[in-house]
Amino acid sequence: MAPLGNGSDAAGEATVADAAKRPISTIVIIIAMQTEALPLVNKFQLKEDPDSVFPKGVPWVRYHGIYKGLNINIIWPGKDLTLGVDSIGTISASLVTYASIQALQPDLIINAGTAGGFKAKGASVGDVFLASEIAFHDRRIPIPVFDLYGVGLRQAFSTPNLLKKLNLKVGKLSTGDSLDMSSRDEASIIANDATVKDMEGAAVAYVADLLKVPAIFVKAVTDIVDGEKPTAEEFMQNLVAVTAALGEAVTQVVDCINGKCLSEL
Image: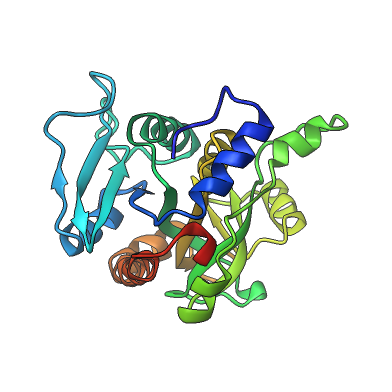
């Protein structure tokens, strides 16, 4: 689907409607961490792109190939050029989402990754959620209307048939640029009615909505934010095992998408 950022709303809606009737052919999967990406790279037998479609000098990595007739692209923001750690967070996520849409013109974006979960909302370590709504919890702008802009609430692309077929939970996703949770973040997350929290989803949702590309969000719980264990400790302890669960869930989603139109999801 071609990006529609500089078209009219009517033209954008018409193009989305037309695309909904065509079989999905190109998928972009945005994943923040290499640990999360590699199991899927191996599962789909993707290859790293030696001739990057992205601007020269950026660390962003594209793995691509054909899986069951689908053109699959996994985009990982790469390692920070100064510190050598995964380029997590909303800035990298929004940049790679925008660049990927421009370069690859996907029919569908999947933002896959690990997340914190709230036991008060029924989340357990290893659960995989398909997000229904996505919002920010750390953009507090206490001015009328700007407050709503800060929250940036958006709907994920509706996939009732996908949910019916797959054993995934549904919950709202809240996004912020910190792994821990301050009391003010907690209040915002509660206001967002979130079951899971991450560091990329709402940024991906913003860009996808801006350019009129359908997006879904698959999040696997590594740690219980309102639990007894320190978040960072629990996250690292469960990362490998939960990443395996994430990979299995994303594979099931892609298998379910294969041969279907957007309107059939």
